[in-house]
Image 1 (cartoon, rainbow, N blue to C red):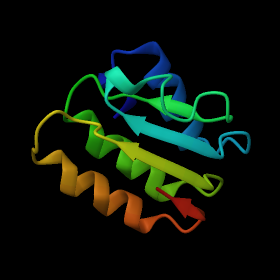
Image 2 (cartoon, rainbow, N blue to C red; image 1 turned 90 degrees about the vertical axis):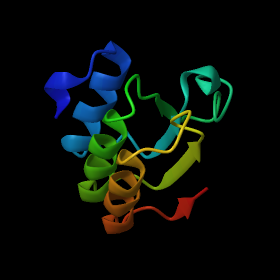
Image 3 (cartoon, rainbow, N blue to C red; image 1 turned 135 degrees about the vertical axis):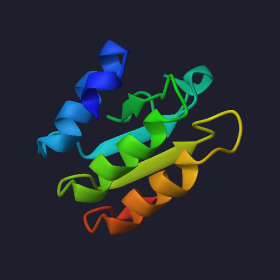
Length: 101
């Protein structure tokens, strides 16, 4: 649910994923410490969950997106929790990603 996300940058990325923004083709899902360090300068947008529960939501939006072509996931949450399987289930539904990393 976008309404529970607190970071403005994250809200924008989720809205673009939900709306199938054709310009959002590259995404890095990462812990805040990696923002701007992974994929920067290569046209990648960054989504850094501020709450571990946000990870399942971004996975669902990735799963239904038709324009995302490249996805990089780098330690998006500091510890394992229930949202990691939800994230992976969402990502596995996606059919547009050509280069998951």
